[in-house]
Amino acid sequence: MNMSSNDRTVTLVDTTLRDGMSSVSHQFTTENVAAIAAGLDRAGVSTIEVAHGIGLGASSIQYGFAAATDPEYVRAAVDAVDNADIAALYVPGIATLTELQGAVDAGISTVRVAVHCTEADCGQQPIEWAKDQGLNVMTFLMMSHKLEPEALAEQAVKVDSYGADVVYVVDSAGALVPQQAGERVAALRSAIGADIGFHAHNNLGVGIANALNAAENGATFIDGSLRGLGASAGNAQTEVLAAAFERAGWHTGVDLFGLIDTAEHVVAPLMKEPQIVDETALVLGYAGVYSTFFHPTKRAAKKFGIPTREILLELGRRGVIGGQEDMIIDVAAELAGRVYETPEVAAV
Image (cartoon, rainbow, N blue to C red; front, side, top):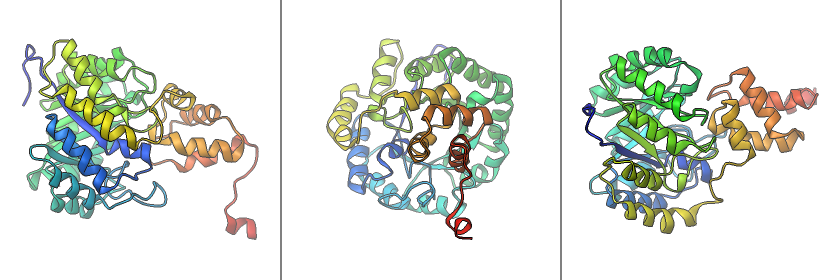
């Protein structure tokens, strides 16, 4: 469903209950999920993403254990809404089709398949499987800043050919500025027939501006989260997106004050701390490092007595991507000038 160039309509997709999980250590309860989903639904948000912060199947010692299972979260959201579609994030290599089937059984109608921007072919199996099940499929090209627009569009052509309904430019590191966001969306718009989405992180403080420029260049699906809840500095703030797009002459179909009420009275009391652009978040975006490295890097910095900025800058120089969180400890240990040993090695 591509919009004509003079149809200034965007669809806001909310990810408070997935990306936002990263800010609360994946500890939203099913009751929390139901309350937030109900508020979003009343405000007219048509797609609500729900799962562990890293996606389906990620509840583990490596990524952090969630307070409930993914199917339990999905069922809580499905039961709480009257109109919204419930979506879940699927990352090949973390989730399997078994976990995706469990989410389908729990009631999702949309799956968001997330692949690193250079590895679109990793999405073929889950995209084609999901389409066979009748699901709506949105595909994330994560860390989109790592490819120039034309190269990113080549990857988008692949996921488009697999059947994706929406292909997202995903600024996983919050490293893009508005011109760069717009250029990538424009390149996709000229290359594929699927709709285009944009997912912002706010590490450089330009998440809203990036989303606005993405829409001006052809994105019709825009992600946000209430109060900006999300990894590192958080996401573009859903209620601010609604207001900013309205002021810019776009139609979103959502109730701004309904979003504000849910953000203020349901989400805000559950937040551990405000979403801000602190030193770690800023340097993470500047260095182009995956947003979920935020808390592990802070912990490693404290453990090894190394400034977080030094760890992040080195991780950026090494070009790490999501799934390489183990490199945080390696880099911190190297910078501290000592070899990190496991207890078994140390015992020998």
